[in-house]
Image (cartoon, rainbow, N blue to C red; front, side, top):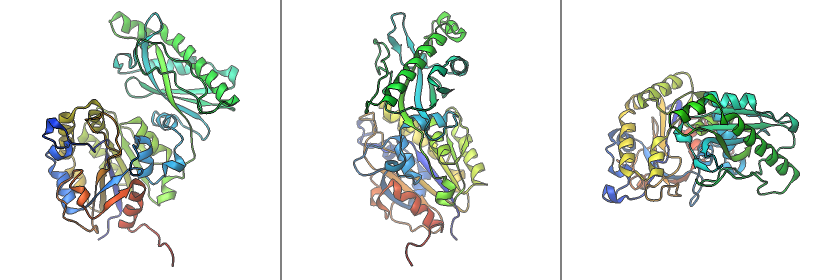
Length: 407
């Protein structure tokens, strides 16, 4: 029997390096993950460079690569993908930005780049969206909240460029930066920088005395009184996933970026909140697989523990993931690929170029002698070492969806 559906399970930032607090093991090696080990034992394993050997892939470029969209051809910046993930209908040529709310003091210096990790900015974002007026530039905006302090901005108009800097100082005790042309000194870049600076100025005026912020100040909380924008990019053109791979598909992801990448290539977006229990996320995946050919399922928190250098917490979260996988493993007619989008070693608290461990499991796959899912065990697998761009062709072949090359 040959499977006909694909689940691409991406454990964000899963790869790691030896950690002293785990006795020289990686979090995967130290974790008790019987379900993932079973998938490894009954599937075929290898290691994978999400983009290419030696490349420290971002979550954006790696997901494009894993979905079969070479980032060298399709990647135009994180901003437009993040904007799409926040629910903005991005059109080719629109300029998108990542954004976050922050706090400045009376002297104009940033004192908190996350505005006290404010939980909900719906009202603030609506006020900015309705109140900022860039009509004198011939530009309209879309501004939508993300999760917590995050948000996204999109600009639409003629003469715009993505070659602009950020106003984020990436430090506290200093004021937000003035946005300027970056990478190219063109009239379009200068015009866009002026538009961005005006947006930030008007947004700060709206936020200064907004009732939400007045209430936060009264409660001793940091107000969300400035918007920091970064990651400018022009929205690209993506061949629809269903046309490219002849599969209908969905994306189940709490991270706005990943949801935005999925929706940008034409996957049906299934809304998920970061606090949604893993068991409920798995149920959503099963619901989608009942009617769709392909599901991209991204699980985020392991990456955050890597960035925070919390090896024990990363190990424990991997164990939590493992406990919820059984319903997916019991679904018939399913080809499962388990991998990471990049490594995030706790020792460096950043993405690295270390390859990630990969399992492919389903009817028709050849099995090897690997019995554990971790960075070293999988390196001995029969898949050997592949690139992220190889994954979709391999999966499509395993479900008999590829076309012969040549006569």
